[in-house]
Length: 237
Image (cartoon, rainbow, N blue to C red; front, side, top):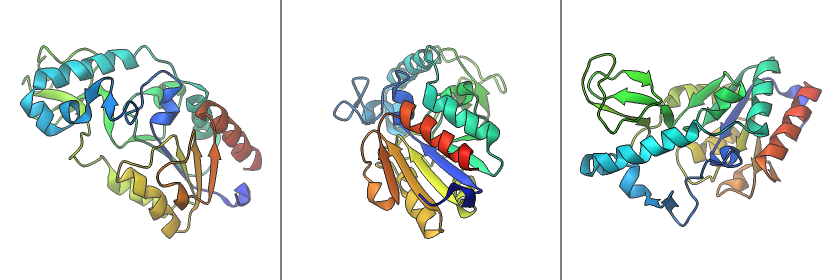
């Protein structure tokens, strides 16, 4: 990479690989299955319309499981960067867990939603939610029983894309950590960053599908690569 002293503004994209070492299953593993479920059965609006109980039970289990996991050194290293980096920083995560926040990061944007939120489709309010949804609890705001997981399913638009593209326009460095490079529009952010003149770095267990777009790729576990990279960045800042 070029000298880090020339970097002021950083955008970081994280994917399932950064949470895998905390025991959270990756979405793309297991031959297209996610915890023994086909994606089409649990992660689309059509699935929810067809069998809402199946979808709610699945996400209730995920919500409960995530609350038993802990941040790993990759999460806490990014939290340190968030605290100490003097320029602009945005951690855009595809992950729907809260491990970045529990690790201490604050400048975090969840483009695919959050397991620990519920969305009321009747009044369009979102609420912090740690309990099951299968019993159709009432919305705290309007009292309806229209709560669903606040997750961006396949076929739905990711959240806050205007903010993400705005951050990329001002970024000097774009870093992708633990992503497959298979899910758009997240997979296209590296191309956007390059076209806007940012430096690009991939930290991953193996090369992603979009690895060729990165100026540099470093391979290894996130819990090792990310703390080392953060130390390098802060040491040069």
